[in-house]
Structure formats: structure tokens, C-alpha cells
Length: 385
View 1 (cartoon, helix red, strand yellow):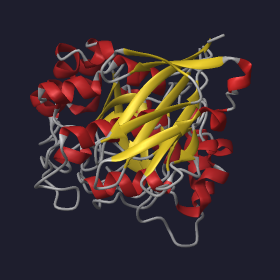
View 2 (cartoon, rainbow, N blue to C red):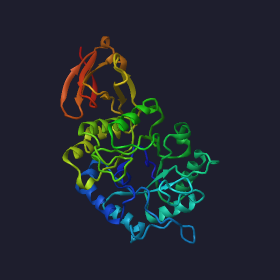
View 3 (cartoon, helix red, strand yellow):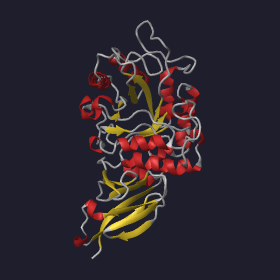
């Protein structure tokens, strides 16, 4: 029976690409599944373990089937999937709508139904579907429709992650194409500038995301600290823990999937605290998945702004962000959220990072925000008179 809840809220999990790129194997995936459970990530809501590019041989077999690289995955993919499933987790893989993947392995162009059946036979629960080497005469909308149809008829529930990097005005057609999530950006890098650029690029696209079709701003770099083996993603430097908290807060309130990209086998305590913050995760996983609206700071709107997300329980999730390089104030006027002081309504503000109730405020809340920092609140409307 089809899972009618598949993709209702943004998926949460881990993907191999950001840290390991081509350097993947059976042992890594099994150890990551173990760490997902032992670290508490599974209990926090993370459930998908996804293998990205570079998992197959460079050629299909004589019947046109994809073949896992026997050196990297000597027991085959079903054995890996079975192990992930034995931990109470779900298993994901990667392919591409072109003739080849981005790293030059066989893509699924003209093999969509065959590959969907193969993935189903291996026990795949999630497919990241990239956009490299797409024939120039083919439009992406047709190709994503085709793989969506193949997945829906493969005999297994498989989450469909359409990764076309925001090309071809994807937000205008992807819901009808059938994907549960769609990449709206280019690849993320382990740097503050990349996080800032990607977040700002999507502030006018939040209305295109909702239940069963989520805007994917790319995978998380929280906790990587320059740990990638890839020059583009970032081998040195990385971000501060505060920048990673801001990154996580932005992705959460903007309803992006929360797909971890660091090596979870060696997470720091600060990384665990960020990735497993229950109050931030709850904002991301709210059942209505309503996109936030944007309120800029009147005298510094390019750097300082708030995102306000209506929650299903009547509260408001409020994120205040300072993307600038110096300490700034965010003065959030309650009028801009439709809250009239004449109605005698204030907001009881609970800080999602300190978990402290900061009290009831009327007319406005003004907060000092560190450079590259944020404040996150769950705000409840209350009568003040």
C-alpha cells in the first residue's frame, strides 16, 4: 500500500557528498548508520542515509543494468540497504537525468523505468536525481516527470529528490512533475559566503514550498569545519559554530530538507547540539509546512531581517538574522505581523537556542544580534489586557 504521508514534511537524514564525494564504500555507510543511531540523530528525527555519486561502475552490464562498484561495495547494494534498514533507518541513492552523472558514471537517461525497478529491488527509499549531461534538446521538466512516473510504478515508496539546481524555473513546474523536493540552488560550499548567498537567493521563493514538495536549498555543512576532500566544497577553514547555528536556523525556518553533510562519526558536542536542537527541528517539521514571510530591518534591510513562519498550533516561529559583519539590532515591529496593540495582544517569546522564556512583549521585540548570528523564537499570542 502506498505511503500517503511520503514527503509530507521535509526529509531529514545524511548524504555522503559534502565530506566524502568519491571516497565512499560499504564500511563508511554501515558505520554512518551505526553513528546515526548511537549519536541520537535517529531519535531526533533523522532517518535517511543517502549515498551520492560515484557508487557504480563506469559501464552498465550486458542487460543495461547499473552495477555497483565491487571494490567499494563488495556485497552489493541490497546488503547495504538491508543493514541500514536493520537500524530502523531508510536508504537513499543517487542518479542523474542525463546520460552520465556529474562524476561521469552512467546516468538514467532513457533507462528511467529500468533503473527505478533496480533501485526498488535493492530496497532504496530515496533517490537524489541530478542534472548533469542532460541532452541539450531535452527539457528538464519532461525528464523529471519521466523518473517520477517510473518511481511511482516501481512497486516501492521512494522519495524523489529532484536536483536541477534551480534551472528552468523549476519552482513553477516541479510540484506537478511529482517530486517530493526540488533543489533550487547550485552546490553549497563550507563557507559563510556560500550559506549567505544561497539563503538570500531563496527569500522570494518560500511560497513555492509546501507539504509533499519542499524547496531544497542544498545539504547542510553544519559541523564540517573544512573537512571535505573536495576543493570546491571547502577543504580548509569552514565556518564557526555560530555561523553553523545560523545556517541550520535559516534552513529550518525556510522548510529546506535537513540533510547532514558532515562526518557524523566524529561530531563535536557543539555540532550535536546544533543538529539535534528539538525546538529548531520542530519548526522545520511543522505539519503545515507554511513558508515564512520576510520582514527587513528598516535601516539595514540587506543585512538584518526576520523570517516569520505561521505554525499549525497558532504560534509563530520567528528567526532574526544578521548576515552582516558587525553587531546589529533587529527591531521587529509586531504591526508587521498583523498584531495590533489596540487588540491587547502581546507575544510570549521562548528562545529556541537558550530554551528560556524571555517573557511577554508588546508592540515590538528588539534584539542585539552578533555578526553572522541569529535569534530564534517560538512566539505565542497572549492577552495583555
